[in-house]
Length: 180
Image 1 (cartoon, rainbow, N blue to C red):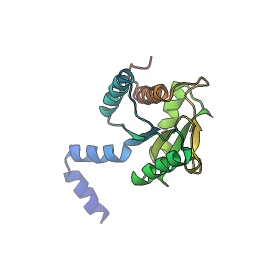
Image 2: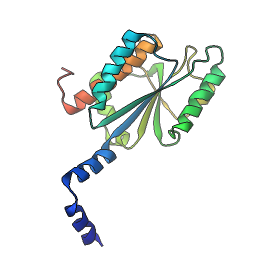
Image 3: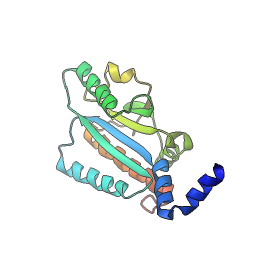
Image 4: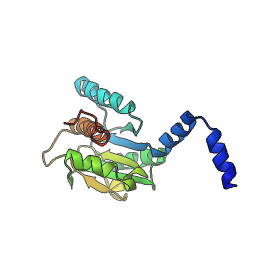
């Protein structure tokens, strides 16, 4: 039986084997954010980093937005939870809530953290709450907290900063000259 499997693999074209290995080693990331990125300048910057990330075979990043419920944190929290459920990201994902008092990393240590073996086996989700933070349905999820800095940024700037840092992490990991 094992010999039959080895013979089968030997007959496969190299490109098929490469594509299979690519699929099982690709790291999937999602950013789930409250509100839309309306500033066209920030959108252009984010789009540029998303384009660069999409050309990297190690990494897939998707951004999902839920509608802001500025006066109803409970509803906003339910919407985020529902989006995670709809995307089938509950239960097997590593969830990071973006918060002011979360874990902080240097760019190099963030890259090292993201590419360690235990993280490669999971879908990683970064969640930005709304203006009032994270609601009860989100806080009940098994999660870690992550901070981009001790400084406070507008949510949309923080979102673009995270996308840039994810791109930088890939560059550090692949030894691309973007990170010097």
